[in-house]
Amino acid sequence: MMTTILIVDDDPMILESTQLYLESHGFDTLCAHDGDEAFEQINANRVHVALVDIFMPKRDGYQFILTLKDSLPIIAMSGVTSSRFEPLEFAQTLGASATLSKPFEPKKLLHTIDHLLNTAH
Image 1 (cartoon, rainbow, N blue to C red):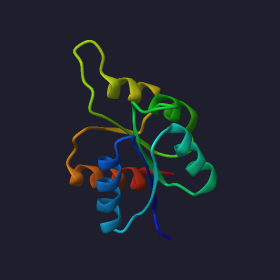
Image 2: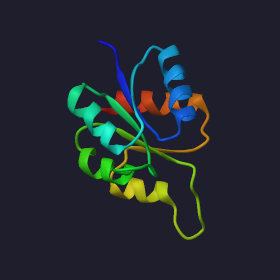
Image 3: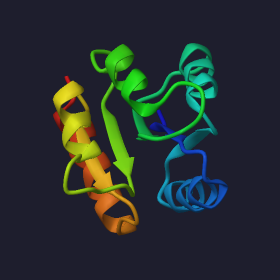
Image 4: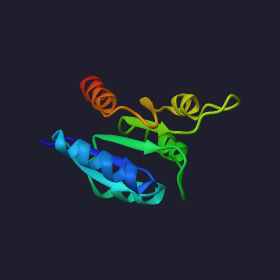
């Protein structure tokens, strides 16, 4: 059985490049441009890991994490950093399984996915 990764990001370049990279490494992928599309994909498909941007239209990554943290591993990603607010730390507090700062090394993404798949129960 193929492993399916849901990629959720409102940036089409990140969505497409991540999809192509993961598919070239043997994963099935599903894509969503916002939180609403992400929930539609989750409801219609079996997803093994979700890679979710924090800041996006409609439902944000935090809402996704809060709703689905007990259902599947979630990798939260963001390019936003600030000395007063660290969105990825907050994502982990809410229940994200892992985090990645954008831009991230593609090999780090693969390593994170492999780790989550090997530790899932």
